[in-house]
Amino acid sequence: MVYDSTGIVLLLADTRLVNLRLGYRVRQFWGALGWGAKPVEEDVLRTHLNAAQVALFQSMCAAEQRHSLAVLRTLQENGYAGAAPTDGPNGRPQLTGAWVQGHGYRGTSTERPSVSSRNTFPSSAGVGELALTQAALLHDVGKVEGRIRLWHRVSTVLLRTLHPALLHRLALNEPSSWRYPFFVLLHHAERGADLSAAAGADALAVALIRAHHTPAEQSGLDAPGQALLTALCAADGQN
Image (cartoon, rainbow, N blue to C red; front, side, top):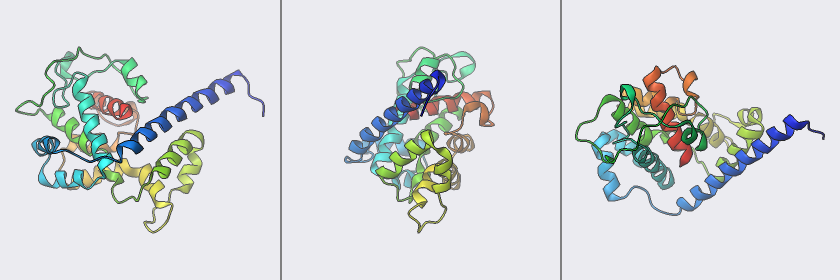
């Protein structure tokens, strides 16, 4: 098979992306051998989630729980207090294009504010803060009861990059089928949004969860919502 220079570049780029995502899955596998939320983290959950949402969070496997908490911590460490911006024009959360692009997000990027030393949850939450906090904690609940194993995740990463049409044909919305985990992985954002809404999550949090695998400019969110989505997707990509 012969590739022109453009084809070679694209092939190398695809290979690099696959290697990065496989490395992430290896780290995720070792993380799966540990535990879920610790008692101190459960206090954080109960500060920002109601009882139904806490139960939803705890229905995830230990690895997904830790991933969601790590997403929230990443948001805090990059200029957010309780997943809300502590500075920046118009009160919007903002991140550098380099940070966003470097951690797997391909949507709209913006400027990042200076990191604040206030990396603790404030006593009262603003609308955007509550939404982003809940979205960080609940964005992957749509994977619950999907019977997802590591090989499903790895196969999905490979197929999404190399043959997305085959992945969509493989996914089947039939819980008894071996193909069902692929359907859950493909549609976990929508499933998670519906589950979170049923548990009484903030309406903006539900929208962020539903769109967290969608480029910001295609999400249907307004500009502040797109900025929140950018932050969530970048933190998700890093973890």
